Amino acid sequence: MKYQSQKISLAYFAFAMVLFVVQVLMGVVIGYVYLNPNFLAEVLPFNILRMLHTNSLIVWLLTGFFGIAYYIIPEEAEREIENPTLAYVQLAILVLGTAGVVVTYIFDLFHGNPFLGKQGREFIEQPVWVQLGIVVAALIFLYNVTMTVLKGRKTAVANVLLLGLWGIAIFFLFAFYNPANLALDKMFWWWIVHLWVEGVWELVMAAVLAFLMLKLAGVDREMVEKWIYGLAALSLFTGILGTGHHYYWIGTPAYWQWIGSIFSSLEVVPFFAMVLFVFTMVWKGQREHPNKAALLWTLGCAVLAFFGAGIWGFLHTLAPVNYYTHGTQVTMSHGHLAFYGAYVCLNLAFITYAMPKLLGREPYNQVLNMVSFWVMTGAMAFITFALTFAGAVQTHLQRVRGENFMDVQDELTLFYLFREGAGVVVLLAVFLYLYSVFVPREKEIIAPAATPAE
Amino acid sequence: MQTKSTARNIFFGGTIFFFVVFVLLVAHSYSYIVNVSTPPLTDSVVRGKKVWEENACIDCHTLLGEGAYYAPELGNVWKRYLANNDNDPKAAREAIITWIKSMPTGVEGRRQMPHFDLTDQQLNDLVDFFEWTSKINTQNWPPNLAG
Ligand code: HEM
Ligand code: HEM
Ligand SMILES: [Fe+2]
Image 1 (spheres, each protein chain N blue to C red):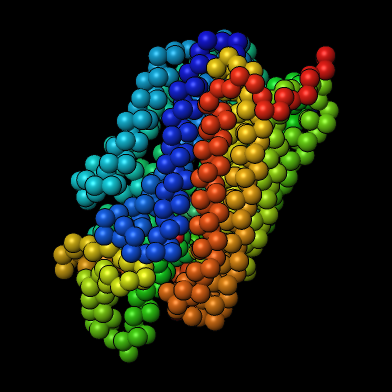
Image 2 (image 1 turned 180 degrees about the horizontal axis):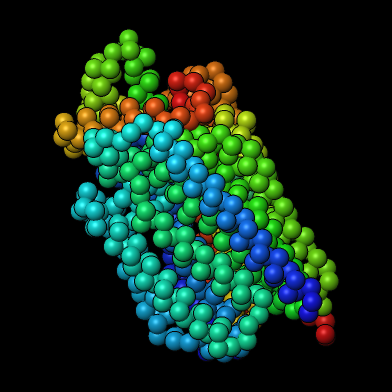
């Protein structure tokens, strides 16, 4: 850590990790409700628990991105963050908003109130006052990092990162646009959801992977910069029109079946390019960085994003396939591996890299950290497989044979049982990860090989 | 650094190009939705959508295939109830309202839908919203009544 203000990210990471635990815990709870539907049904119904699961996911991933940016930007711009106090004010707003959301959901406060009550569009159910708070926090953040970059060194990594973060804030504004016409509502809702995860978030991913490669593999900047605009271009050239894969059956014109199928199939390319990128960099790299766990998470991130977003996305993205699988457990399986591989792993990779530096220690607990990677990833893959099979059965029985939804669900119990078992393992792996990152040790269990002189 | 600035320019130029194309197509889709694929909105449909949102129904059900996967698709619930009630709209409306009011069943081992405190007006608005939604031209999705 070269700059004092990089310490800001420590607080962001801590908050993100608290929400990570809440998120996975809620996942395990709703997975259990699938098996025992009367559990909590009268106190906290499924929809409320699910909102806690998905919203805490989104908020912690974003909080992680903020923390990452506060770490990367000073090093790239070669100066301190413009105003560290504001960065903490921003975090305080996020914490307050999150607390507000949780309390509002759990006690259903201000039901129906257009400003204070929860709203009802998936993922953006937060009350309006919280969403306004998020906008304020985003403005503070963008001011802070943009000024830092403008007054400092301008690198390709910082540019692409900033662009991604600006895009996140801009598309979030569509949360405030809720047309009364449901088809219009849906069309623009995807401007947040799809243009985030398959658009601007990919820019963040490319930039963060690039930064990690600079540090972990020790490739020279020129090589990384050659790649980074290419990765960004591939992401947006395919991802923008790829939005069409959500415009097949919601009242939008039929031509989206062609546009969506073609461009969203091409969305596999940027994810594959990111795999090529990280492996090429490691291969060409000059350095044996001692933080092997961070490298494992980084490579894992690219590979798992390729599988979760790329392969599992392609699986159901062609219109004739999607006609049958749309809104089944197939969607669920993809949603889990894509979010996990791309954005959960990205955050965990960066935290693994940054934590020893923020705390002024050597990389430590590498072995435990690496174990947590394999266990968490194995269990998430298991969830993905279980849901993929559940989705195939559901598609056949319900969409092809026309059997009643609830009857079909009864046939899927075994898959949901598998999901729950693996879910508990994910939760344990999360605790293992947190232990390995936060709790100091005197010595490595197995010391990493000595670093050869450069 | 010739290649880097070329790459950057291609990135910015291409992104602007694809975004403009996207916005134009969405603008066309906007007018297609308003004029062709959806029936005209009425006050009760607009209110019904609010009821749908205030109660976060989307976090159990799918609507046109989007939402949560815990409970049945409701984009075509109106058609399902019509089919089960000899195509009698009055009976279908009554049946949906009775169903909502009788929740939760409390049946052991069966997924529960919560009890919502809805007025008769709100219940009727909801049904109007379902009926309106079922008339959206969805390119024949879902494949069958099961949703
Ligand atoms: C990291 C990137 C990605 C993430 C995080 C992600 C996540 C998700 C999530 C959560 C959904 C469900 C949305 C809902 O609630 O309705 C979804 C739907 C979908 N995704 Fe992705 N996705 C990613 C990339 C991709 C890619 C690259 C493709 C195509 C190659 C793809 C294809 C689809 C399709 C076709 C659907 C609609 C499924 C349906 O019809 O029910 N996704 N994605
Ligand atoms: C880091 C790990 C996880 C991530 C990134 C994640 C992500 C998500 C996302 C994006 C959704 C919404 C999907 C959609 O709308 O299409 C979701 C829903 C859900 N998740 Fe997770 N999740 C994780 C872990 C878990 C675990 C461990 C479990 C349980 C064992 C779980 C159980 C569920 C359930 C039951 C739903 C709701 C399904 C429904 O709507 O019927 N999740 N999760
Ligand atoms: Fe998408």
